[in-house]
Image (cartoon, rainbow, N blue to C red; front, side, top):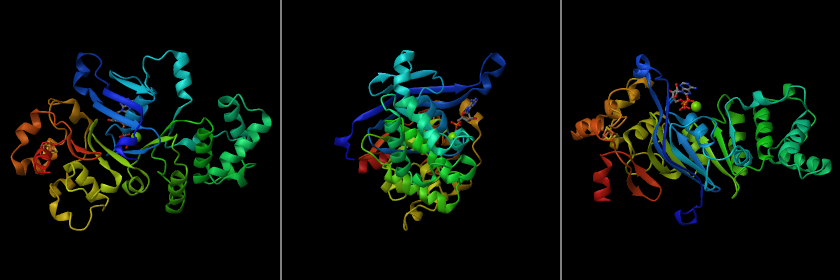
Length: 342
Ligand SMILES: Nc1ncnc2c1ncn2[C@@H]1O[C@H](COP(=O)(O)OP(=O)(O)OP(=O)(O)O)[C@@H](O)[C@H]1O
Ligand code: SF4
Ligand SMILES: [Mg+2]
C-alpha cells in the first residue's frame, strides 16, 4: 500500500494511560503504560507492534478498542470518537473491531461442536441470515481457516492451532474492519505456527486491517507492511517491515531487538550503534514512572547517546519523530544528523 493509497481507519492522538499511583504514598509507583502515543492504522493493512515485555503493547491495543480506560487522548474509529461514543454507537463499533488474545482458544465452549459455535456467532452478529444462510456462511468461514472437515468436532478433540483457527473463524463471522491480534502464534510449535502465518496471509483483505502484536520479529517481517516499535510506553520508531534490519538507521533500541532476533542484514553489524547495550539491564516498569519522563526512555541504556556526547539532552528532552523515508521515522536525537545528511 503506497502512502497515497492510505485511508485512515483508526487514529489515536496524545494517548496516555497510567496504572497505580492512587493516594500520596503510591505516587512513586505510577506506571506510564502508554506515554503520549500517536498512532494511525490504515484500512486493509497489517501493521505490527513490537517491543519488549511490559512495553505497553497489549494496553495500547485495548485502549484503541476501548477495552480499558484512557487517562487523556483521543481515539477515532472510522472518524468516530471511541471514548465519547454512546453505548449504542459503541455496540455498533464493537462489531467492527475485535481483539484476538493469547488465550483465545479458552473462549471456546467445551460442549459445542465447531459448527454450533459458528452458528451461535453468526446468529449474534448476522441477524439477517436464516438457518440455511448461517450454515452456508459457517462452512465458508471454516473453509477459509482450513477447518471445514472439523465442523462436527468439539474443542477437546482439536489441536491448539485448530482451536485458535476456530477462534479466528468466529471473529471473521463478525465481518470486522480491524482485528487486534495479540501474540497470535505464541505457544504454538513451529509447524502449527507456520500454518497460522500462512493463514493470516491468506486472510488479508482490503476491508480488514490487522494490528499484529508480537515478539516474533520473523513473523512480523513475513506478514506485516509497517512496524511500530514500542519502548516503555512510547512508540519510538515506525519502519516498513521490508526495511527491518536493513534500514541505514534504526533507533538504538530497535537495533538491539534486530540483533537479538538475528535480523540484521550482513554488513549492518559493524554499524551497530550500541552493541554493548544488548546486554543492558532488564526493563523495570518503575523506570518510566520516575523522575524524568521528559527525556528519552532509552537514555539510561544508550551507548550511542554516550558516544555522541548528547546524553544530557537525551535525558532532559523528549525526542520527536525524525522522518527518514516513506513510512520511516525514528524518535531519536541521533537521527537528526541522518535527516540532515539524507
Ligand atoms: N491491569 C493492570 N493493572 C496494573 N498494571 C498493568 C495492568 N495491565 C498492564 N499493566 C502494566 O502496564 C505495563 C504495560 O503492560 P502490557 O501488558 O501492555 O505490556 P506488553 O507490552 O503487552 O507486555 P507482554 O509482551 O509481556 O505481553 C506493564 O508495566 C504492566 O505491568
Ligand atoms: S535520543 Fe539519545 S538516548 Fe534516546 S535513543 Fe537517541 S541517542 Fe539514545
Ligand atoms: Mg501483551
